[in-house]
Image (cartoon, rainbow, N blue to C red; front, top):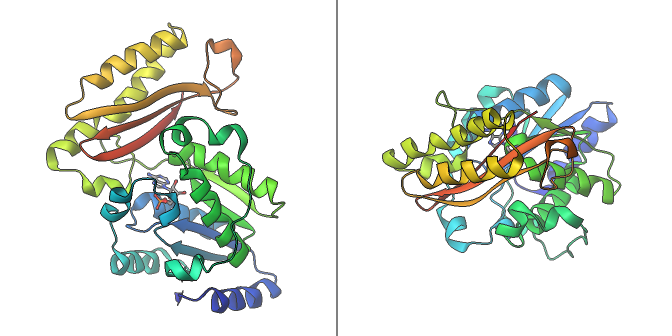
Length: 280
Ligand code: AMP
């Protein structure tokens, strides 16, 4: 596995590979890697000729400074896991290398930048859009792989690629879960033993929403799940929403959408977890 810290050196290497006609697959991450990330690497290896992974804790997408400081960082372990997974190229840039003073792209994310994660983490997706557009300019991938755990983020990245007319194909990959159902997340390492136990109830909220969907209208499901969430020890619900899976517009009736998704964001102690489930 080749490791780059300088964008110019990486771009040069990738240009050589591109000129050989090789298809480039890109997996951007913030490190503290787990099996969810590795599943993206594996999918990229299946679909692309060369897999590039970036590990970069992007400061501009953290609206909470404490969250940025607490964010886990395990660069040695990440490097070993990527090597083991057969990743071809690792990009490990510094903050100054990415935010080099060049102006931000103006990207209108529209409705996506006003709801759910955007409403609860102001500026978050502007930061995501900035870092992803900067990475896309450096890597110029043919394919880019993102986890559906960050459901809204996948939509944001697709929108960004469209607005900037980038010839990249965005691929949404399934959520990888622990054996008790908790979605894998770098943030899970921040949970105490009791919090980790409580966190196992988060996917149960979504499973229960799916079970209730058949016999109840969306508002009844919302009320039920909100009440169920309030019983999770040491938790604070940020939002629970049922939305059209294609637009993320909240649903009043099931007839409004061909496909529906339930989305949750919840604090367990100080740690904010997100998850989602397609209902139908
Ligand atoms: P992060 O390092 O949290 O920014 O995540 C990097 C990429 O890995 C994003 O596209 C995430 O959606 C994806 N990812 C994170 N957790 C999981 C998971 N449990 N299953 C699948 N993909 C994931």
